[in-house]
Length: 268
Image (cartoon, helix red, strand yellow):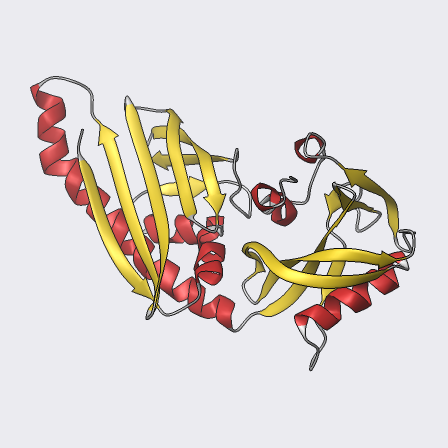
């Protein structure tokens, strides 16, 4: 089965590069100039589906991994017996090493093997090079982006989530408590302030969990663990709050950015 691999060193932390990889638009832009099209939701997450096409030929990729270690996707419907795209991230002293690989299996017989040599390898290498350049550029953008913080508040083995009341296009969906970091404010200070304003509770923020998640070109979501130290969550501007077990997490209709964090929010 043919396989190609490329490596790129990106001058950004692992969580930032992982966030760049979650941007569906990044993948779409990197292949558009090659006559390929990719469409899907705004953010990649485990279980998401991407639809790709080249002319009249189309296929569906299922995302099997999307976290701080990288992204993987496999063809579940399309013209090839097998196609897999994998990106692994490794921390180094000089930045983040991005290891991209693609492997595929063409239809059998001499024509299939000829297609691998003449078309498949060349196209796969172009895709990997374009993707590497796009990841580097998007990571640089995210380093300058404004931050929205999310609080992963765990109490007695359960995670706190809140249900949006507005705007209409997101009403009813679930998210972590949090909000934008104000100018001159630290991420931790924003977590404390937002939890007090939104839920009338006091929390102590801890370490970051999961990757930076792109919301817009100049805005990202960054989540932190938090310990509830005082108060009972009382929503001010949300429909409801709910304490969730690990079994509950995948059953809610999460906002896409918060859904991307779920693999990092699995409870002990």
